[in-house]
Image 1 (tube, rainbow, N blue to C red):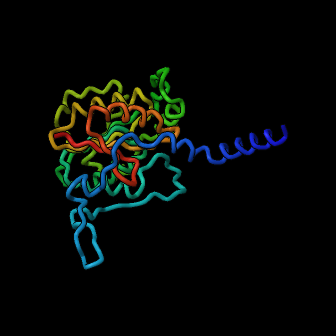
Image 2: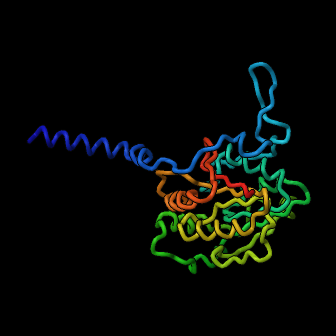
Image 3: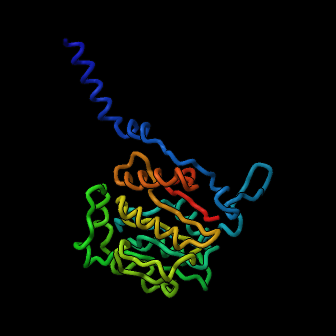
Length: 257
C-alpha cells in the first residue's frame, strides 16, 4: 500500500512540474510547417561566401524594440516582427485586426512605401464593457481582450508615419468589409483570441484579400491556454484551406492563389 501511494504521489508531482511539456506533446501542431524561404522570395538567402549566407537587400528593415518597463503585452517576437515588416515592403494596402499598442502597425508603416495605406482596427477602450461574450469562447482569451484594449493613442501617434495609418475604433464583429473586398495585399490577424472573434476576423479577411495577397495569424501556439481558440479554429479550417505554420514562429500563413 505504501509503495502504491508513493508511486502515485511521484506520478502527480511529475505531472505538476511537467504539465506544460505534457500538454504540448498531446497538442502538437496539426498544420504543416513551412520554411520562411518558401513563404516569399524576399526571404530567400543570398550567398556571401562559401560558408555564409545573408538576407537580401529587400529584406533589410527599419525596426525598434520596446523597453520591458513599458509592460506592453501580446507583442510579436523580433523575428516575427521582421517577417511582417519585410512583407509590408511589398504591400500597398494593409489591414490589421487588433492594434493593441500599435507596435506592429508602426513597423508596417516604417517599412512600407509612401503610397501604402494601412487600416488597423481596435476596440474603443470606453466601449469595452459592451463586448460580446459567447459561451464557447476561451475565458482567458476573453480576459486578455480587456487587458489589451486600453489604448486610445499608439506608438505611431505623432510620428510622420501616422499619415499612412487609419485607425478604426470598432468591434470587428460589426465591421463591414464592403469597401475592402479583394483590395488588401497583406492582412495581419492579431485581435481577440476567442473563437468567435478569430472566426469572424478570418472570414472577413478571406473576403478582403486580393489575388496573391497574404494573410498572417499571430499566436498559433498549441498548448498555450490563451491561444487555445486560435489553434482550435485554424486547425479546423486548415483541413480545407492551405494554411501553413511558419517555422520557429507562432505565425500561420496563407497566400491567395
